[in-house]
Length: 166
Image 1 (cartoon, rainbow, N blue to C red):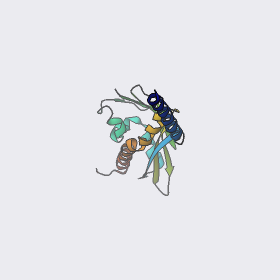
Image 2 (image 1 turned 90 degrees about the horizontal axis):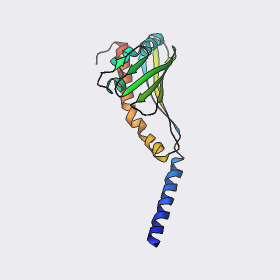
Image 3 (image 1 turned 90 degrees about the vertical axis):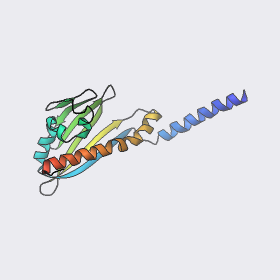
Image 4 (image 1 turned 180 degrees about the horizontal axis):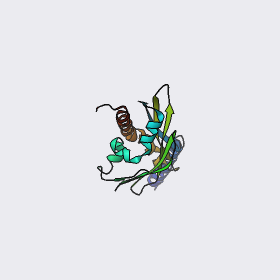
């Protein structure tokens, strides 16, 4: 009986410690990548705002459904992924991503005109997490999961707009 009591108390203390550590992890996580593109901001904005063009540069969309999804000017619908454009301007683009039946994820692009015809394109994903420790600890790997695909997509976009050969 003493051994069972010790085991139960140990589990409760361990769970409390894990929960307390999870309180130090923020409930809002933003994964962001940026690239400099040698093109005017309005031409970069026009290209990004037309989601028909995404199949040519965005690997996060094209790899989801092996290129079998339906592109329109303001949305992408595939078997595993849906992307919807919420708002668009010359300076920004806000989208909503939903993978299968999971929660919707906010994403967007910010465009900043640098010196001359150099445009900084920042792409981000915003995650809002519940208080559950497993969600917060799981968010630690979001950067490693999304970062490489975001970088590859932004480099493809840069190459497309600068007319370079890959």
